[in-house]
Length: 238
Image 1 (cartoon, rainbow, N blue to C red):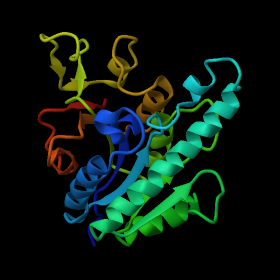
Image 2: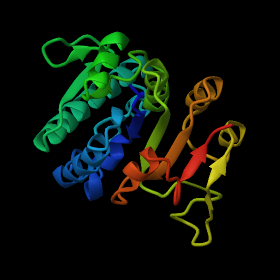
Image 3: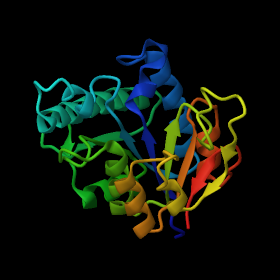
């Protein structure tokens, strides 16, 4: 039997907040669930990682000097679990079979991450949401997404953002900003281009894992990328 395509989608926590800037917007959850359903119904295996910035970011929590960075990052990991549970419920509401696996043990809420179990879930057509980052402080959810994608042998990562991809300058500030359709990993590591953090990019480079950056709010875009249509987005690869 032909191997099904397997992808991992990384959502920012901030995107879940919608226009509110904080918390979880149920209309955004519903939109994402509908977009994810399109992918799964096309026989594509799917993992998901969600950030926690709509609730708390470890670096920001530690900025005032009262909370240590390690504790701040632990707070951020817990925020990703909250988002993962919300996403599980949203996906379940449209008939999808979902499991949440956490890098930190919390058996009363979700499964603990075990790569073999995650792979079996994916093979059975279940979506797996990977929560709590890598389980270690000082690592971002970008790095967690890349690590999990490698561990589950994903064909690519899709980083779903609020813009169409990577630009030569900030598209929110400059009307003449140009979309960069194709980048190498070395391009992505340059200081003036922020695709993912350097650790995530280095991991992707070492494992030849392509990264597509796209606008998560463009209906059908995630499915198009999953089907190798890379128009109107940016792709990082060798």
